[in-house]
Length: 109
Length: 367
Length: 164
Image (tube, helix red, strand yellow):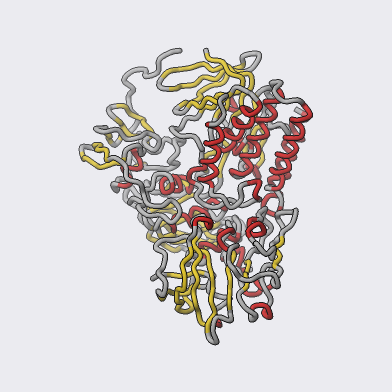
């Protein structure tokens, strides 16, 4: 649920709509917001399932510290959705277990 | 390899304040933060702060954040690196080298002095159902609601009645959620009475000597079971109560985010009153490793106001150590800042922190 | 002691506070009621009062002391309190009614002349309240001050409203 009106923060400013795909379903997001915010606003709370016991997990710390909110984003697993902003056309998938990194994504100095 | 005089890890209130003071004295500063925006936790603090005028009392945390950002942007000597994860810290003799990932590139940043202002993380409370979607930190929901303007649920159980639990409960009401109850394991409310009164007068029950026994739901939170506890923390059978909720917030304290500090090899000590393992530091906020300073919640869980003062103190101490401030002028500034910080530690709520900090500094003398 | 157990002051705790005016002063006209009971470093109310009716002093953990003779009940201090613990009570509003000014930071704000529920410190409805004014100037920094009228016997009880 979006907090449209707020006594201290004022009216929620308009932001360009960004379309993202979550498990094949298109949802509307606000430009610049973290993926997790868009998902929660759309009513999606379960982001991944754990490796051993397939337990559902969602947002816990919301500031990128705990890794509970990780999902597969554009094919890359273990992405912390609470600190990763949405991009138009992003494809997000519920992650099951741990992912496989395709290659090293950090260049050496 | 990049070089600077003063590297700061963490652009929250402590890091920003240190950057401002050091840069004012002429020090060249690089301020690195892993987030997209600086400000740390300030931009979710929508309530008015306490203290005196010198502590920006009456100003909302968000506006203090804006003020600090304006002040830092006016300093030509400060470079802010956002989206920058400091993953390592190595002795460079003299100084230290930080390993920083920025824009998917690994950068080595050599600095003569380093401030670690990495803040804190929320504690967890374990109970059956604690991992369900919808169980989250109180600070987490505060971020979701006040920064991202999203409410993850409508009926919230708040676990913990310290200032975080009380303030966040109030802010949840402001955002249009219902706070079904605040539970507190101790027999009395932990935070300021005025914060409790603000929510009590809206009808939110504050249940002391009560905790959450278990939480149920299919994948996400649907029900919470409360239970009363005795003075030995044992649940009293027969006092269970079920509540329909969709979010359970844990406001059970914070712990310093100490990984980077640990890597430096600086000595720690366990101070429960300050949140757990904290780096031993002297009155200049310098750790047992020369050239490594700490400030803010990493140096002991307190508040944004004390983080600002500690950051300022480090800024002055580093400027002095690097030769930008004469000893006399530095001493005067540090005394002024210390006095302001001490004011925030007065009274029954501050006394344990005050004594704990004094003990830490005494410890540093023998290390 | 209800303050530390339930989160609100009971009448016994209230009357001993230095920021709470005497019964004698209360029947003279509008006056502030500062329900601040704990030593916390905080003094914006002292700064906010134009008439210097609130005193805290050098040690900012002191409880605010009200000089009730200097207080005109203007209400400027209400929005200054980060704890929202300050109210203005006028038991002379009419023969049967008292007026109360209280801080309010929720949406929607009530309208003037709207009838709302008057809640006590425990959040229980004790009476109906009529909204006189809703003040929200820039200098209050988003803490609105709402003036309501309640039956006189509830002057020291009603501290919040519910718009139903």
